[in-house]
Image (cartoon, rainbow, N blue to C red):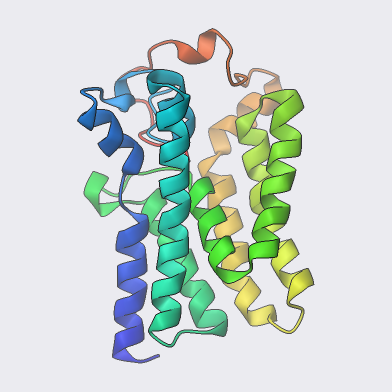
Length: 212
């Protein structure tokens, strides 16, 4: 790895770290960490500020991932190193230096890096997310399944890129780990469904600062 490529990894991390949902909320005079679930991701922005802004945040978080991969590729990174750049973008989103190394759950940015690496794999992952969330309204469950699908679909579509799949598998583990509390609630049957009345209640001050 060259010095330029090392800088590429750092830039991918910093791009992924931009807290889009929080920024959009503050521009509207709302700290999204103090409403709904207390998260700064697209789902909570949609709950608190409406569908238009929620979709906007989702798209920009996806774009962060695409931009990070395109930048790394422009700097000559390919194969496993390019996938590492993609992983760094998601790490930035999940552990943002702009938020004291707190952050989101990485789902939208993970979708973005997958679009940058292998668009068809991204479409498969997003398709699974949509198929699950539409009837269940369980965004967390759909996000976990979509994250698992990313390395699987990538490997099946690029079977000669086993090394490049390893960082994506690590990415999946990170996303699942960020959903640990959601998994506990899912197992107990207590996970809130998107659109439910309780999901719109104010979050406690100590709530996590990001969702997607």
